[in-house]
Length: 161
Image (cartoon, rainbow, N blue to C red; front, top):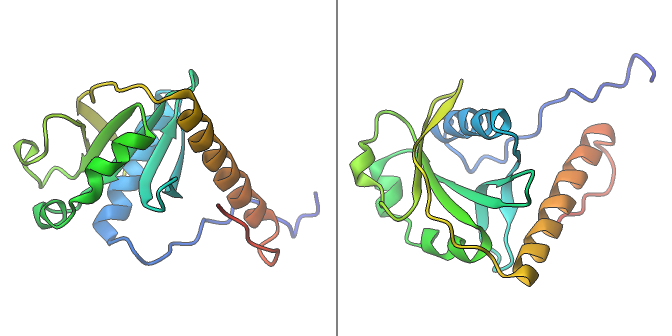
């Protein structure tokens, strides 16, 4: 590979996330990586909504993580329940400045900062139907491959489901 070509360029930030949300996302993604999962952020789901983080386990399990940077952020967002239709387990990721008891108990909870995260309580499992799993996996694969391609060919055509 020519020395002038590097594949270590950071992914662009799209501007929708606060600095706090970006720190929570980084730590949360480090946690998933440490337990053997691959992740993508801002994945467009089958219903058009965007999941903050989707983690894919080695066993094919799909986990969605909704990041909440403040209690007001949580109160303003009623769409999180819709994410259950696209994953086996649903989690919230928050900073340690948010009281855990403000988060719903019927979803998992992760507390994170920019350097790491911990699962406070596990999410209940609700297995996806095979057809839905396949559709989400294809979206995950296309998003991941497209983003990797963009790192090596930043001026190329963009394609994402």
